[in-house]
Every structure is written in structure tokens, then in C-alpha cells.
Image 1: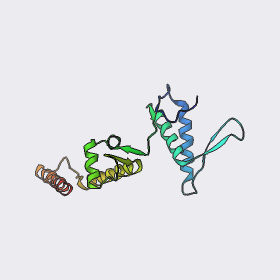
Image 2 (image 1 turned 60 degrees about the vertical axis):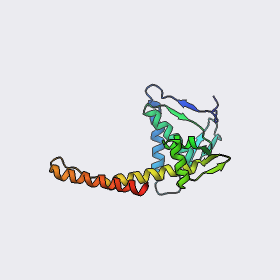
Image 3 (image 1 turned 120 degrees about the vertical axis):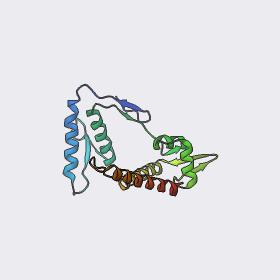
Length: 176
């Protein structure tokens, strides 16, 4: 069965999935062995002795992700994406509304090219924005995290929570 690269495909895990464990073990062992050495090499090997093709690192990572998900009993969907996105596609990818993407474009936080009356965004730039937004969110969570001791005095806990709320309000003011 030949792969159809331009159509979305969903792969379901098979019963048990024990036959995938050696594949994941093989991929993980070879990845770990690479350590500080030069880039490890991955290949697909056919039946014939000379049936071999090198796999790029990103294909290896995709294969490992598919095998890991199937082994966990999850379905995997492989869907091709264009390198340029509409504002709605970018919104779906970021998990926000289309008007939010439009505001990000207007503020200059998300680069976009105007085609007629529409915006086109590059996939790599949207993914980079998503990663940086996630990093900022995690940093803010770490900054505002507080340990609340179950045995702490209620007034002390209340004061810690007030400080966190103050930091959140301050961040909203600087953002808005």
C-alpha cells in the first residue's frame, strides 16, 4: 500500500501493540547511544542487500513519535500542511480566535504578509511564536508560583496569594 502524502491519514493502534515495543526500544537505544558523538544515522532497509535509504533526523523523530503514540494506545494522524497559513489556520494552530491573531499581526508580534485584503502567515513563524509564547507563560508561572504550606497561618497564605494577584494584575497592565 503506497502512502498518499497529500492526504490526511489516521493510524490506529493495533491490539496489544507488543510488536511496537522493540521498534521504540531500537529507536531510543540508538538515539541514546549517539550522545555527544557526531549525528547518528538512520535508515530504512528493504529486503535486498542494497535496499537502503538514509532518513533525515526530522523523519526519524516523526517515526519515533508515531511509534510512541501507537504503543500508548493512541491514534496518530499525519496531515500535510502548507508552509503558508491563513489567519484562521494560524488561530487554530495557536488555539486562539482569528481576531486575536489579527490583533497580534497589527501589534507586530506575529509577522504576516498581506495578499489583497487577506493575511498570510509563514508556518515556521507561527510555530516560533507559539514556542516563545509557551516559554513566556511557563516563565511567568514559575515566577508567580508560591509554596503554600498546609500548616501555614491563614494570614500568611492570604498575603502570598495577594502578591501573586498583584503580579498578575501588573502583567496585564503592561500587556494591555
